[in-house]
Image 1 (cartoon, one colour):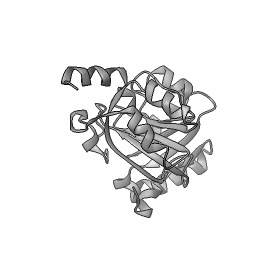
Image 2 (cartoon, one colour):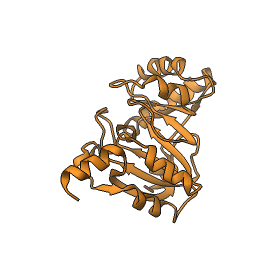
Image 3 (cartoon, one colour):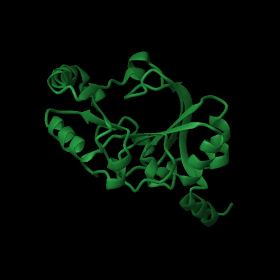
Image 4 (cartoon, helix red, strand yellow):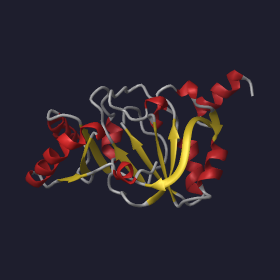
Length: 210
């Protein structure tokens, strides 16, 4: 395909900048401990300084890959697929998720919610970032709100986000990995005093798996 044709296919969601895909155990949030096939899509302009996959930011570094191939790989491994990034909603997720659903796969997303929601989702994990706040449609459909706690001020941000999200969303506080020793005890105390929240940990890092 010519470069212009590839770009058009990416714009339509027929091809997506695929960074990596792997079968592992979900490490964070509501579905912690369950098997899932992760599809990491490149491209993100939210720019969190503590991001642990900064190599995902530049979409140009990741080859545009046909969604049929992505789906073909995914269905070999798991009943649940997690779309992550980068920021997957940078791209139109309608075609990819439609094809995954056709294969009777459960389709989850992990997103900052910074862009309008596209796609069909069985589980919508919203992890808002201060630099680029979620759009209303993300707040409206979130099954799970996961706020990363890097410093004490992030507790106030978490409460602001909880006030915006739909009332059925399950609320999680998760320590940023490099600050886990400092922040985890604060999160434990906070959740005990504010039991609408739950603790999320990056258990995959403790298990030393992807």
